[in-house]
Length: 104
Image 1 (tube, rainbow, N blue to C red):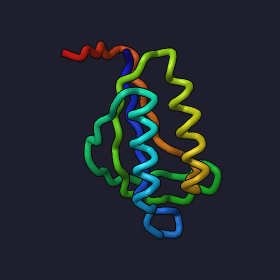
Image 2: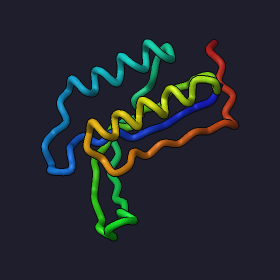
Image 3: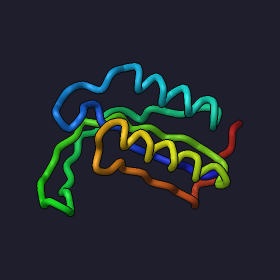
Image 4: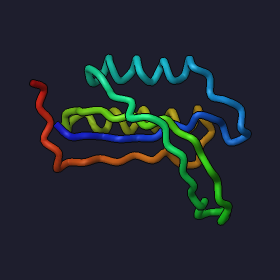
């Protein structure tokens, strides 16, 4: 298994809060596809848009999931769809292939 971490913003770019239903959909997807997830907490960060040079700040919810290597493409596809739905330029995604995950 590998470990994936990704950040979902709490607000749309126009500062409107993202509805709880969307977070519930994300959680449901992770349970159905991968058997579970962990919310590591909230994070605040900034990034510079490489196209415009504009700096944006986001408050995000940090998700972590253990999954089989063969299922990474499923998660990436879902996050790309979520990026569009949330009107984001990018979604931070980290994949740690060196982590050995066991359920004890």
